[in-house]
Image (cartoon, rainbow, N blue to C red; front, side, top):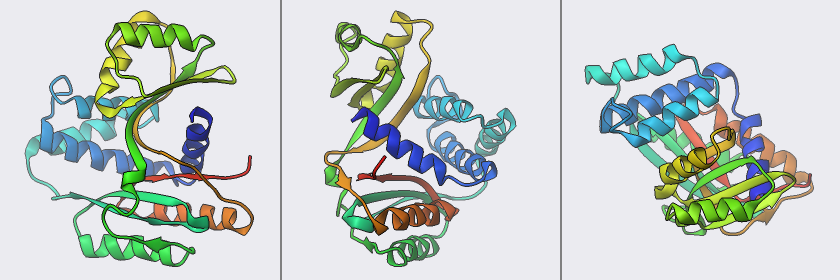
Length: 240
């Protein structure tokens, strides 16, 4: 699971586009999170996680600060979340999360990405039941048993833990995110997370091969070029 997760993360990162687009997406998500849940990251844990993630992805402080200031004013754009589900190249399952101020525009943009790249857009719930909403942590290590013991002592409900090529991957329900991060940083003060995220993890993987690999890359590129698309999750596994 850990290696597959990293491969999917690399695929998404590769198609994320220019830095300015990444900054824009973080800015929009931080703005919406702060507007809906409050601008204090100590009281809004979702905002704190977003800010930590943005800093890890080298988003400039002024982008984060501007989004929070905008939320503090209470005005600005009225974004709402939209989720689209369907099947991509090779029959892989795909979830597309968006923030939009125009649902018709966003739906048409996402639908075209599917139809032009051998995919099929489904209805709500078409594939989401085949994904688990998980907290994901990946870091260097060689003793998954010690990590598991640390988390059990902290009363963390761990879904899975894996050691692969010197990297430990911890999966747990998304609600356990901060409990895991606190337990690991207290037990290992020098720990550096390669990945600390809340993601939708597929219950099964779909092998995509042949011509479908290039089509998948084109499909992900098209989705990530859509201004309203925030996150893309899929269960595709391609040849190394």
